[in-house]
Image (cartoon, rainbow, N blue to C red; front, side, top):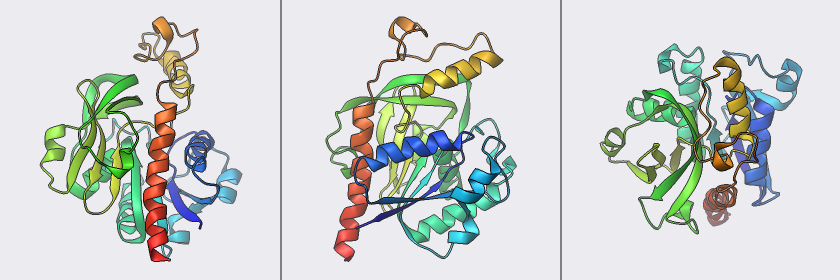
Length: 267
């Protein structure tokens, strides 16, 4: 029984993001088939065009198909108004398609913010500085299939310039906050009816992802702060502490099990 997952990869380093998602989702079953999507209205400058042409599909190629799962990654666009993003109209068409042709959708970071804005008009808010590090999240909603076997408090990588407000989310009756942090804000939100999940943070990150981002940001700004709660004693020369990977595998396994259980019911 193959689980078909469509992934709209908006990240600049597409190969790295592919590998992260394949590793986390592939641990559940070898019978997960990925279809990677790109935007037609904007061509990535950080990935070889030949690679994109070979491994990626435009939306028009798959718009008449249905998938078991859909993932929309983040993108480094938090400082821009949504409507100013060059591929915004195309993105909203993909969101609307996913709403009708996908059993369950999972949106990450800016992708989650964009989806909530499109579906519900929920605004994002720029912070004074980038929030980067490993932040503790508290389970707000209990007995969720998506968080089964996860502890009531857990750590998740955070890397973003914008946040969402709990009050804005709580005004929408369809939505509920599953994971939340007093420091980093809401983490995981679900649509109670349509099996859509919004994660403003990064369960998919590898151990060294925040380290790579920190080094990149440091080249642009020597005052870039060290990611919070990441390096032992805040020493960038030391190996980061991994306190989320095990839980991230459980999380993604839960999502795929939610999908596969439904597939089994339909067969």
